Image (cartoon, each protein chain N blue to C red):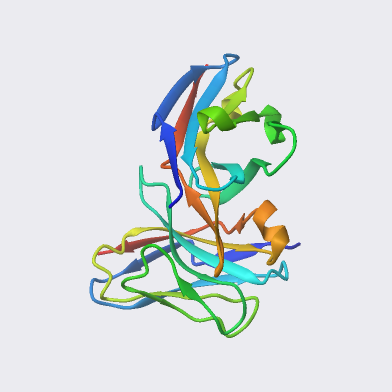
Length: 116
Length: 115
């Protein structure tokens, strides 16, 4: 069964701690994305990666970091520098090239992070 | 920069009534447009997309949307609402850049279906 998995589904952390959210895909997609979702604000892009060992900042990258060492994995670290980290985090993937312009992004089930 | 505006953060409809969700976009180039649906505490699922060709696009679960270039709109409709349509709906536009392809999302519209 092809798809995107995110773990854990719920995550609680104390303020000041770094936390890493997992995202794995077996769709053989080259591109992967991280979004943050807050009520009434839609989805905002944090980071994205078009190929292994390369990634780009999105619209709200401050306080976050990523790595892309393997095609199927794109973990997101929420650092203590992120001022308001409590949110729902969604990972997505897509194919590359011209096809992606007409294509879609496939989303994982999300991780809800709560910082206490 | 591209942007997407969804009019109405909440919409309430009766079961069997028409569902109409509004989406307007701004884009300097011909856009690719998408509607996604999100059920509580889940990821997003593609409902339909417009790329080129026919401006009336049919999607899953009986939804359809019409691309109107003159109005820069891509409104989503369903003739008869079902209880299972209760969810949040997002309109998105493709943001084409040399470094890659990104989606810009609207703020979302939450649909409540009354029995």
